[in-house]
Amino acid sequence: MKRQFNILKEGDVQTRKAAILEVQQLLQKYKVDMRYTDMEEILLEFSKILLQCFSDKSEKIRETSVAIYSELIARSSDISPYLRYIYEALVERLNCRDLEGVE
Image 1 (cartoon, rainbow, N blue to C red):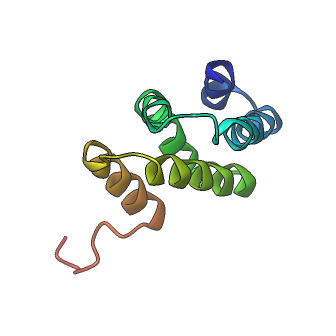
Image 2: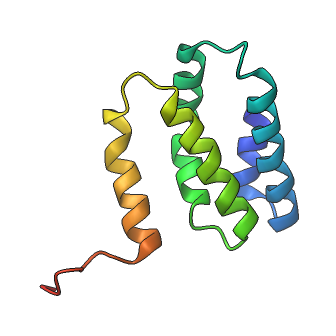
């Protein structure tokens, strides 16, 4: 799985798309066997890469990374360390930094 996440950082669009789909398949295949601590370890190590995929050019990569991240967050006991990064990624992706118009 680590190899697939490394490809997400450096590969071309088709390679990244194949890598994210393989990560999703692996998580689906083993999610029954994985403990919550295993999911938290995956989230801890690869959270930033997945959040970067939220702004990818490919819609399939964006959609799949959101689905994977949602699954990992749902299976975590404490998401507070990740909230800051989640908010930053969402604000950037949705272009809503200045909703009140004060800047």
